[in-house]
Image (cartoon, rainbow, N blue to C red; front, side, top):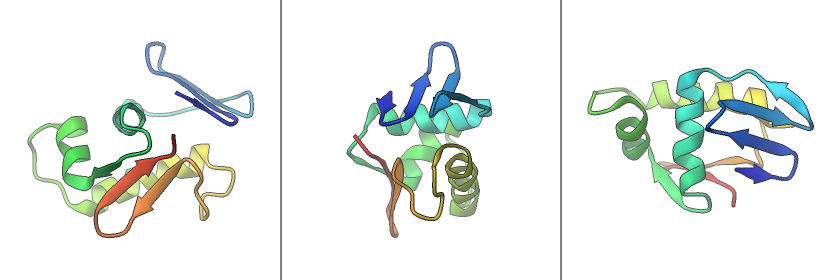
Length: 96
């Protein structure tokens, strides 16, 4: 996935933003891979949980916390995200 100044290499588990390395956890990479595969489409919270964690019961708060951590690492202005956009009451969309 490559968009603007964000580059994600899922095979090598490497991320850079503005040419600088970004340290992401394996779970954060799985979340980003799930969103990037469907860039431009909304991925529901339930779909994210199943893709990333499997068939377990997690609260929306767990997903929100991970998304927030990812935004703090990859977004130039995390409070005004341009890569991972929330769709209220549904899930998230990675900009294509």
